[in-house]
Length: 65
Image (cartoon, rainbow, N blue to C red; front, top):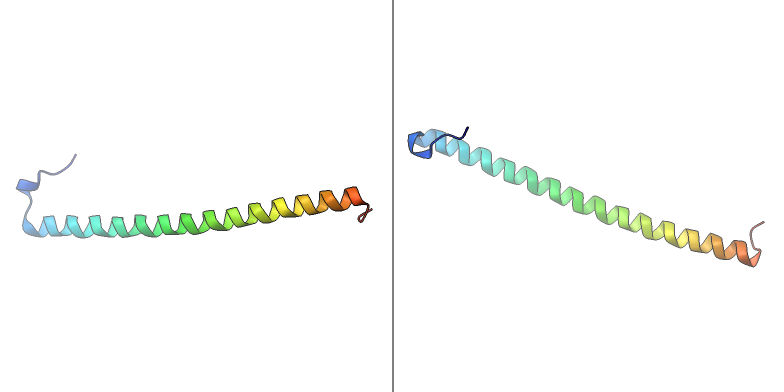
């Protein structure tokens, strides 16, 4: 249950603001990490696709036996 803001002291309000800002910072850091990991995953997916095509092409041409 949420506290009624009118019944909180200034110190309690400031503590809640600090906690909220900390959570916002944590969420922002998590989003940054997720975006970075998604970029890495996309790069690996592209590299894997290239390798599949290369191997398939090599197998058809008889370069690999």
